[in-house]
Image (tube, rainbow, N blue to C red):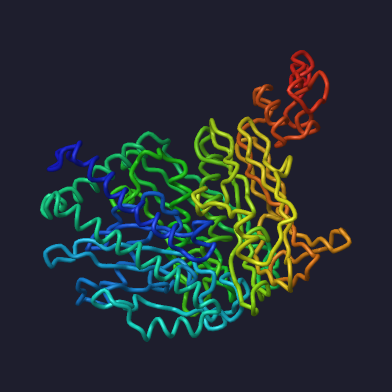
Length: 592
C-alpha cells in the first residue's frame, strides 16, 4: 500500500483526535442526561460516527459489542430512506437489520454539509425496558421474536425538521413499563446525536469538506496499513478452539459448544475467523445476531493485537469473519430470538477466540474471563411504595464485578465486568441504587481465590448480596460460568465458578435458579459469588513478592499461595509483617 497521503500526518492526528473528542462529547451527554441507572451509572451505551457512505470512522470509548457494526445500522437507514434531509433522526433496534439485540436502541442522525450527507452520528443505549412480554430485556427461553415481544424499530423516523414525530413517541410511552424513564433516556440519545452533528459541522467549516474527504480516505488507508503491519508480526498458522456455554435449562441441557477457527496470514496482513462449524439456531433467545457474531469474534482477535492501531473501517478491512445461515453464532433465521445476543454465547465467542490464539502461540492471546449476566447483573422490577403512591420500577443492576483474564505480562483487570465490553462499562454506585430503587445491598466484596492462578493472575470476582427493602422484587438473570468456569491458558488455572444463591431471613443459604427469574420478599437477599478471570502461564513462575501482595490484597489465600504458587511465608500473618520464606519457597517450587 502506498504511504503517500494527501493529508499530513500532523493534520491526520489532529483531525482524528478531534473526531474522538466529538464522540466523547456525545458520550458525556448520555452519561449526564440519561435518566435510568443503566445509562447514568453503568454506562451501558456507546456513541460512534460513520461516514455518509456507511464506514465506521470514530468510536472513542465505545463498547466493542456496540460500535463494531455501526456501519450496518447506517446501511439500514440509507437503504430504507434514500431521501434523507437535515433535521431527520431515526430509531433503530432491529437485530435482523444490523443491530445487536432489541434492547439496544440506536438514535441515528444524518449530518449534512452544504446539502450533502457526509456523516451519521449514532447514540446506542441499552434500555431498562423495551416492552418485552416480561419485565426483562434478556429472555433466554423466548421461543421466537414474537414471544420475546419487544418493540422493534427498523430505521424508523422519529424526528423531522428537528421535531419529534409524536405518534412514535406516544406508541413507546403507552407500551413501555417505565415511560417517563424511557423518554428521559430517549431525549438523552437525541441530545447526544445532535451534539455530534453540531461538532461535525463545526469541524467541516474549519477544514472544508474537500479536505475532510481526503482525510477520511487517508485515515482509513493509514489504519489499514497499521493493522497489516501488526498482523505481519504475528506467527502464521491456524488456531482452533472450542468453548462451552453452560446448559440452558431444557433448551440446551448439555451446554452450547462454541467452535472458533482463526487463521493468521501475516504475509497478507489478514486474519480470517471461521464460525461456520457451529450448531444451528435454537428456539430460544441465546442466538447471536449477525452483528454480534461478527463483533464478538473480532473483539477476541483485537484483544490480541496492538491496541494503538485505530479501530475503524480501514483497520477492519484486515479481519474477515465467515458465517453461515441459521447458525447460533452466525446469521439467525427469522423469527429466532436474539434477546441475549450481546452477552452469554457472545462472551464465549470473545473468550474462546482469544484463548485459542494463546494456546496455539504461547506468548500471545489471553485467558478466558467474565461470562454471562448472572444475579449480579439482574434486571429487577416491582413497585416502589416509598412515595405518596406506588410507582412501577424496572432497572438492570450492574453491581457485580467479574474478574478479567490474564494475558502475557499482565494480571487480569479487577473491574473488567464483561468480555464483550472489555472493562469499559462502569459498576453501579451502591448508595445511588439504594436511593433510586427500593433495594438494600447487604454486602459487596472481593471473593478470594476466585481468579485463576498463573504466572500472570486472573482477577478475582466479587461476592454480592442484595434484596428488596420494602416490597416484593422480581429479578431476571442468565448465569454462565457455573458448569464451565473461565479457563486459564498456557498452564494457567481456571477461575472459580459463578454461583447464585438466596439468603433467607434467618441467614441460611438456599438454592437459586441458574437461569430464569426469582421473586424476593423483604428480608431475603439474592446472592452471587461471581467468577474471576483465568490465569496465564505456570503459577510457580510468579514472583513470590507478587504473591505476597496478592495475599495482603485479599485476592489469594494463604492456602492457595502455598499449594498453587509454591510460596511459603515465615508466618501466616495478615499484616505488612508478612515475609516470604525464600529458602522454603525455593525448596517447595523445586519439588513441584
